[in-house]
Length: 69
Image 1 (tube, helix red, strand yellow):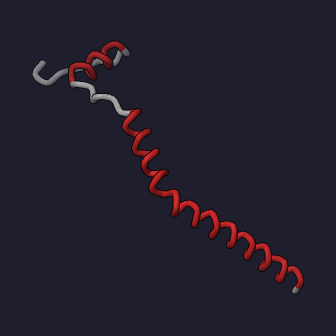
Image 2: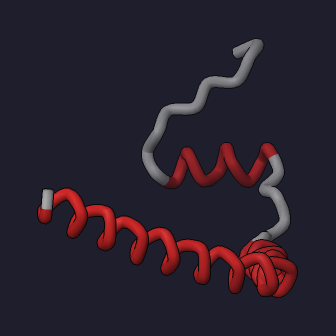
Image 3: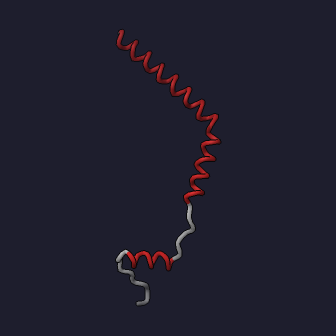
């Protein structure tokens, strides 16, 4: 019985910690999403054209066959 009570006390403490952390995340969620959006925009580059992709594949030694050849 003592072990069960101890486990319950530990679980309650863990629950309180998660609850506190979740509350902080809710308040700071908007700022977090803004940081994520900024990182995504910073990391994005212009998409490669078809010719650039074909040239890259050729440079890597990958055989490229176009339709109609």
